[in-house]
Image (cartoon, rainbow, N blue to C red; front, side, top):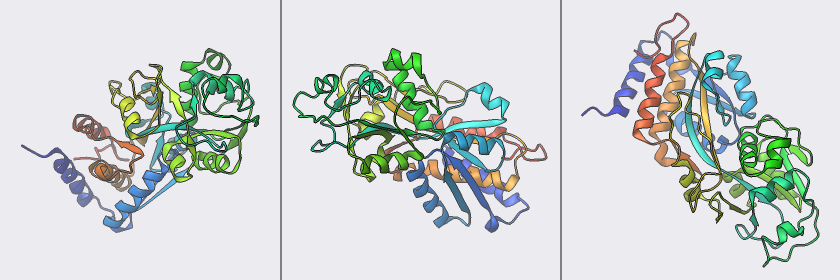
Length: 345
């Protein structure tokens, strides 16, 4: 039986060998989401150790990544804003999933430990709508009867750049709060009624860390690295769930991947230990008119990532299902170069 991973790697190697350019001089660039930035840094470092290729990636937010790949100023983008089939067709883009992880509310409250503070989606929405402004509000205190909450103002921290994290977070709030759905809805840019904007997941994490009484939302690994207090969040089944890799995976495993664009919404899903806010990061590359060397090396980079998924950081979930990986790599066969020739022979 032919090993599919090895066979595909051989096709990529053959494609590189027949390319007329100098392999050692190759550099590929990407931009986009800050959500997967920590694991992308690890992957880039590992890839560059074993390949004569430099990979650069700028964490500028999903919206900016989409803008740059559409304008062909980068070789690839990573976005947490999954594009529809029509959007992909309009901009000549191919999309496939790369990695997933949990988005968690984080707070800075004195004498409160990670996981012991409870929130519901509706209360969380009301905080971000400016309807709940102090931490000892009766709606918060009733969820946390064992905690002595002080009359401390709530400092709402949100993203001010175009963000896939915001896209997923606001999508979740739209599902659990009618008021949120009616007033703000789902989007990567929002007209926040209250709060202070920060750039990137790291910007929010730093601000929450510095400001007592603050609340924000970040990818889980940022909460861990900044030692922020995470909350226990009520899910669709009514259970209060702690954010960790197991609860993220409970939601992730419900993805069907049926759409041609692979787009999935993994928020407010059922399951006793299913974390209610899970996001997927997608790769965007152009379908046609590609520089042959650049696209071959871009594919080689992502092929290496998929082959190295066992070494992934514990805060993320890799794309490792063999059937899904076969489908993703098969989709790469539609890519063509500037002369209209297939990139993969």
